[in-house]
Length: 621
Image 1 (cartoon, rainbow, N blue to C red):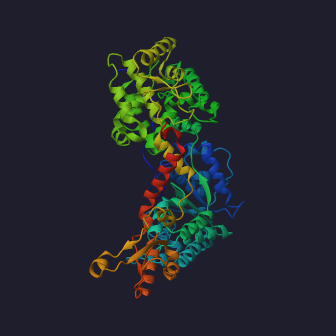
Image 2 (cartoon, one colour):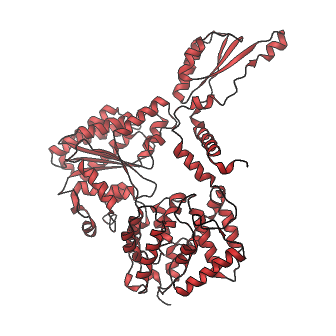
Image 3 (cartoon, rainbow, N blue to C red):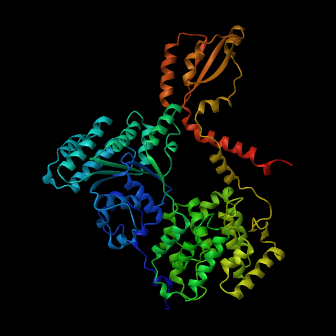
């Protein structure tokens, strides 16, 4: 059997699984192969500033999409803040460039993965676990005994104030006994705690996070750093709460310095190259120049977005073999929309999924012209995401794309490959964007490997568009497409509406304007007595209930009051008020279920209305 590409890929195992903070902190290999990108080092320096230079900046929230590498970064910062560079693998020490971190900070990491439980108990449990596993038992820490007595209960409870005092006491005792210079508390999956807090505010007050952040920023010699990892902002977890409660959550969020964790394209290239860890000497000699030329073209064509660092991308292009440079921005776009960003990207690179890069590397030899191209990625998407995309076809035209590909002449593999390349670009190309435009020049650059191939694909594009009517040219700004009609990507417009419309602050105000307020006739009373009686219907917010019940009734015989409660707490308060006024025969109070369960539907209605009003292409001509 001839040699394969896979024989020259030395994949680092750390890229093959997600990070679990508590489990992986003691695994010496967990950070082997980690690539500290410039964004990682910049973020690291911002956090290190809080140790001495800016002690009022010791509470951070790191926000980034699923699979963006937040947990791996948290593992890195935990090791660095405990032992400095000495606690890292030798290779990683060399990769860390000039940094503000000097020496051995000596902070003890308290690592906690979020779950749906009170965060006070979870933090104290994490603190107890840390003291038991990382502090010699001969130290006889008094706080350890206190923690054991609290957590020994079947359903342990502790007040927020007591929890803060215990954390401060543990810090002071560790410093006094020379076991650490402070604590760094890292809350991975902080959103899980926030979900619990929103659902059960009586069991956990979000104000505890504010108090903890303020305690960290006030700590002087007894340094405490707090780092929370989130997939989305605080407001995403408080949407079901009342206006007042949402404002309180916003105040809590403001106590944390936010760091957005997102890798730019040039750093993705370095990450992919590090993950493949290839023996570049085995590749065709012509590959290096071809890869750099292709990368330079696609950067200039805007496929990597505005402001992409062309020099860095071109330098890193040879390291991503067997990936063709045209595939990388498509991968990133696809997985940011349908997968979990880098986590899905590395799964594609390293797993045994059908059509993935690993399977390609096992089946192909490193010969000139052999690389993983757009049509190969189309096959991967069809095999692994086809059902999901088919169910969401209104959002992405997948069923139409798949039907066109299946109808291609199987006797002409090159035609099919070209149609697949156009199809995958049509799938991920943003509407009204200059990114990933399938122009003839771009398609030739992505598909052909030499001058002969250039002429061949130019001719195929002409045949598929002019003779066979499979490709449709929609101008230089739109490129080639697999459908003739001008289409509006409704779901991109829907996403635009979500970004444009203000946050939904009062469900009651939105719902009230859409409800029927015609008076109700007491039909049974009319049938039995012949007297016509009507009741006006008044919808109000929970805070308006008391006032509306006292207003005089003028044009009807009675009033039906419907308080539009947004939370269970408001519904309970309205029921209590209704009991106090139950002796009134003219005022009837009806209390529906809280509106929080309708928020998603109300937002959807508002966004579709925005799409209707702001998309001229949808108007009848």
